[in-house]
Amino acid sequence: MTLINLLFAVIVFFVLLGAAKILDTYIGHSFWINALILAVLVSLFMMVRRYAGKALFPKCKNGTCGPSDYEGIPVRPGDKGLTFKCRCGQLYLRKRNRFFILGDGGQAIPYKIKRHFYTRWDDDT
Image (cartoon, rainbow, N blue to C red; front, side):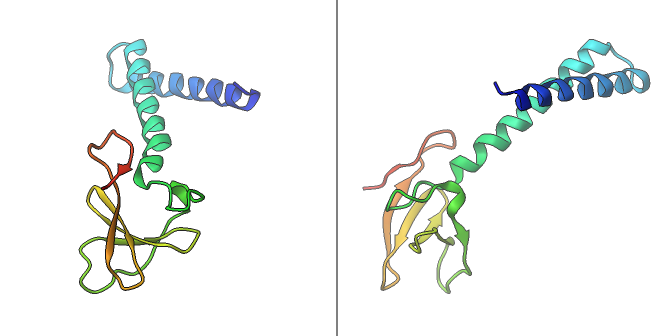
């Protein structure tokens, strides 16, 4: 843990204690129960924010672009999905839990599939 992370944790701790004191003053209940509820909510929010972005997109076909290197492009007529382009320039189509490579002729070639919300992207054969 770096010094900046430790400083951030201490600041968040005191902000949570202050928010719990405000809740205790206006709502009632126990001060420590309010502090625990706030700590759990903030922890869940931070975990979702940290890991949700990584699960949205797989690595590109070349293996150089990660989940944050995709950008959306306008939807082509007839596509039932969202079209994306990685930093390498390769076009992809996402339909629900499947990720397709768009070929030169516009055909969708199966690339990756996500079987469950919490699993990683697997090869789609």
